[in-house]
Image (tube, rainbow, N blue to C red; front, side):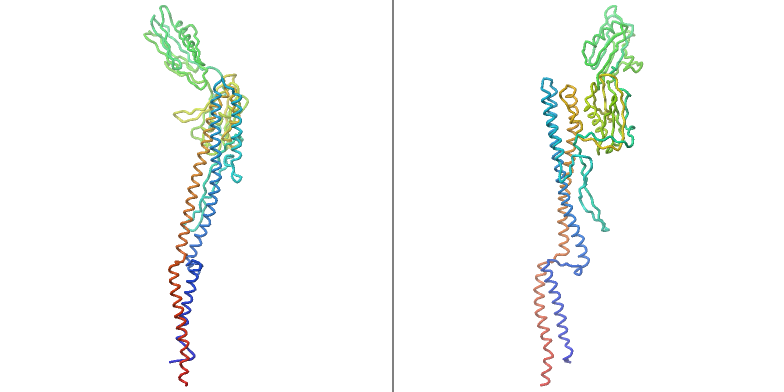
Length: 505
């Protein structure tokens, strides 16, 4: 049946052409934008995922900038620490030269002062964008990543770079929690009194008997002559000991067979051994050692002349923990920074005391080979002085190069002290440079990873939303042909009512 009111063929052709035009418009949009999913209506799920990933890519671009800034800051600090190490090494060379007495120490001291001033200049100038990593103790946090969990939550992760203080600041001793339990002083006074061992010689000897004694590793012997007794042996052994000319070691006898061996050696024990050959009951015995009581020994050590502060082997050292040693009426302190140990505290206190250039006072730091305990030892070659220790938390850390400003090689004692302490300062600057180098390497690795991660995310986003241009081009041509055919079909369908007119001719 034909109708001039309803043209079904035209409606079908029109709907087909509309569909073709719609697909053609979509394909043209893909080609012009390059995206298969350009808006949420194209594919809501894929569009949402791609937008989340695009936001992450932009975030990682900001992280990359942060890492680059942090790397530059750490690089400046590393270069400063390495330069300081080189300058301290130059100072060590000057100090070594000053050990020789036949040199102009005043000129050497002038060179040391110039190098010291250069170190201060380097430390002060080592800043990037206003941040100096070789002053103070506050850590620097560098944004390193944004970690997205499966539930969609995001957390930031940082690379923490520990600041390394290479200043000569003394620090500020705190008034917080007492730390006295972490240290033990050996006595309440530091004295110059010699430590002793008394060797008692028995009273039954025969001619030809030999009395043997070893002092500080040197063996001595006396053969008794006819008619000689323990008194003669004591006089002879004391004379032999004094004849050695050992520094800080002397001997006296009482004329009745008792020989007192005295040692004023600081930081050095002196071993004493006794024996006899073909003797009757005339034993040679150390009956009193270090003045501590009656002993029946054939060997013993005369203890070093020094008082000491022993540090805990178990207590932690926190930023701001201050320890103090009182000698006479004055106190000398060291305030620890982050990640320091009792070794650092002991060496810091040593430098603090040495920097005061006290007359007759010398110091050293030792570690017990068995327990690992660190001790600060203080010797006094003058009048008796009070000796005490204390500790408090809550202070401001001392600089890693504290004591550098007080080094003076114009005297023998100053040159000896400087040689001992410069090693600690060099070690501190080397540790600082190593820490910065390690942190800089980690930052570089993270920055490379972030760059590669961003590229991978971009690739993933492209795979989801980018148009396949080859397929889109082929589809465009096909749709253009379909559009032409659809137009022709609609034209033919629209011609159908015209054919009805022929029925009325």
